[in-house]
Image (cartoon, rainbow, N blue to C red; front, side, top):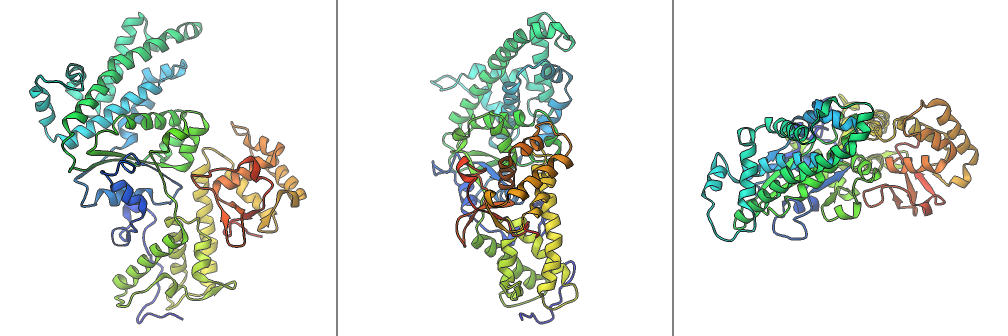
Length: 514
């Protein structure tokens, strides 16, 4: 057994915090993957557009942004709080709510608001203080690729609040005033029959106003920033948006329109070579956007960086953290690796492999499982099989809660769907071999799940393949390719193809509970 002199495990022995923002191990133990290098790249034309980080819960999205912000090659980093800057205003504005209730498509308006918020951050980074306004006043003649008059007009229209949060309200109020005047009606008071008769007219007027008074002028301002900063190639600035998976968004009916508008807006600023707007989005949210046909997935491929970890990377990350724990909390001098403290067997399998196999190959999973093992060993000088098996039960509960939080907005009864896996007696199975079990699962789901708006449970009762696909999407089953290879859902294969349903499946080791 591995033993460190004077080393006694305690309940508070940890290899890091599950929340990257409070993880004191992160800076020292951060593993620089190819994704991190790509985000840092400002010169490579192939890497430069890649800035939408897509990953499952716990895959390390926030950790990437945190380390990027502190990297010495980044001159300055700015954060946009999506909830407080744009979303709260949209959600609480009476005028916007009235347009939504009337069925007016406001996606172009959301885009213009996002462009403004992004423009403000870019200008603040490139022109600290009042230097941008000084630049505008000094712009003279000469051939320009932008219309300085339109750019100036946009600045002047919102000058009083251009650089503070009040501008979002001001933009909305000016739009309400101008639209009410041009239509000759009070938009917020329209109701009943008048709504259906006026909707098309309001839609045309709204789209025209946003296109001519906001987007057209915003794009000239973007062109100005591109041209005037064309010689600033040595400077590197980052703007990050990382709160798009919070609970305030998941309960909103406009959540997909809101994030889709951001994805449209930030593309407009890609040619500003000194600034990268980096967006972090959870996999289930981007799936919801694509499933609602709001955008074409193919057009985003050049922008997206999916986070996917392999066994080697997870092991290397754990090696770094275990070594840091021993050296800095227990004054160990020798290099200590993950498999040094998990150097025993569990059910005939090496403990280190047993742990990694039961994660979903995400850093948070691995850190959580190891922390739980260390806590079980409280007062001991070595770990053993019983401690790990105790920890596994707690880890299972933790992972199941995380999966519910991750997928509940798409599948409200995901917990029940996962629970029904317990009826399958073998971890490897084909649909053709579980006929009776399949019927039992379908009956149980229909009998024990309440009505949900997208009728998923009712659909499962009619077609078991729908449940199989949900299991695959959530990662609790994979396609069994060989004795050593199981294909689980990732960004490149998010769900099952029609040709997959006849294949052999494997229940993820953590969720095979028979």
